[in-house]
Image 1 (cartoon, rainbow, N blue to C red):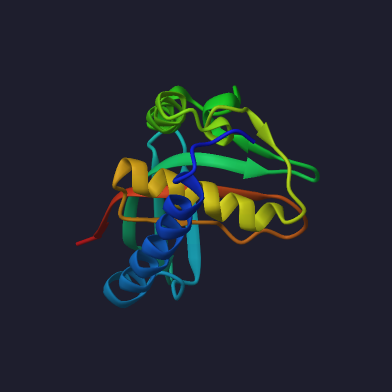
Image 2: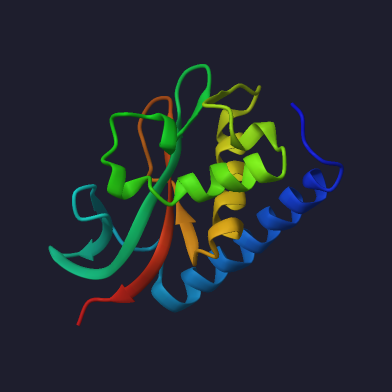
Length: 155
């Protein structure tokens, strides 16, 4: 796909920045250790809980999802309420301004869709200066990729 020469390195750096942010969230908010998670698309939140009690809440945006054959950007999916995909329009605009076809094409294909999903999520985190990302565990195929706009402990 069409992109400027700098984009591959920029995307690679974005992925490593996301890995560092994820490590920091594991240490600061125990992300990955809570036994339960629930997202509320109407509220735009992802809640991690333990023993029936909410512990951590993140304000989220839906980056996109993978299906059996492709990646679909959140901004292209009419299923999601506008409020949980509106920031992805900034990612799309970044792609348009910089002529990065991967960020402006509704559906993308790849041999490893999970890796592609994480790469696109890392790009979104970098463009939006988000604090991290989450891919809820899922039985079977496909995946949902979310970014954390903010995250906090429940008091």
